[in-house]
Each structure stands twice: as structure tokens, then as C-alpha cells.
Image (tube, rainbow, N blue to C red; front, side, top):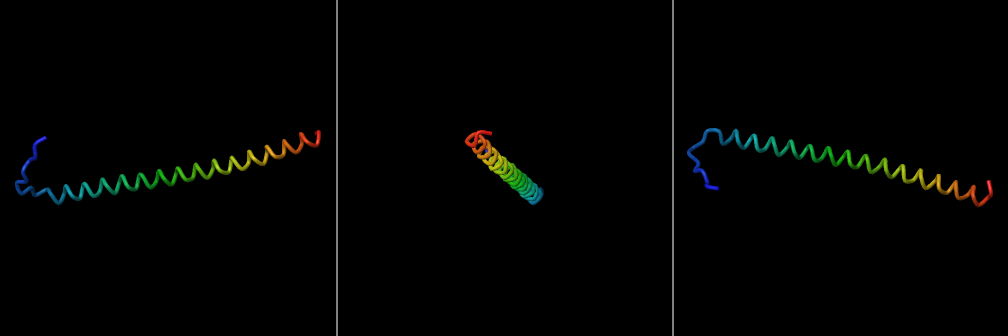
Length: 66
């Protein structure tokens, strides 16, 4: 790929602004996804704890003969 020489492009500040905006957009998207992933993991942790409680109760009832 050949490099195009800079010919005093007046839009260079606009290009920087666009690059900065795109970077911010992707950064915020990634942060939002990380937040959603953490929520899902918290919910899964709660489900895991509920399953453990149910399993202990079932085991207790089996041992007691009910």
C-alpha cells in the first residue's frame, strides 16, 4: 500500500475529530457490554446458589426418608 502525501488537507482536524469520536463510541460500547456481562454473571451466580440450596434440601429429605 502506498502512502499518500499530505497536501495540506484542510480536513485533517475533522478526520482527527472523527477518529476520536469513533474511538469513544467503541470504548463506550465495550464498557456497556462488560457491564451487561457482569450482570449476567451475577444472575448466574444467584442461580448456582439456588441450585445448591435445592440440592442440599433434596439430599436432606432423601437421608431422612421422606
